[in-house]
Length: 100
Image (cartoon, rainbow, N blue to C red):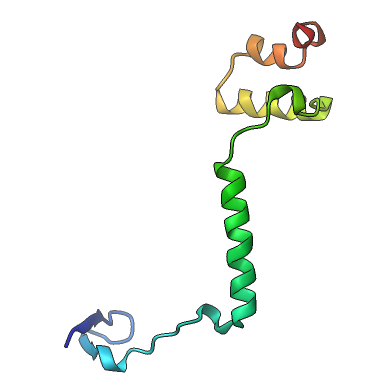
């Protein structure tokens, strides 16, 4: 018989230890009391997303071109984080550099 010992510092003026036996702890087989169909659908979505995350990247030729706004945001983010120098960040938006 294992007991869970909890300290109740906020509830009482002085710390107290309360023992709760395993038989008294309520266990739920379904989190948040959701229907099994919902949990099944969530697992299916999670597995699909895990497959995408773990899958190979698409070849660069198949990727759509980046919009100018996306380039500007990437440049600003890289500068803020200190990942690139100002000159390196400027290359992200330089059309001549991007065509090479």
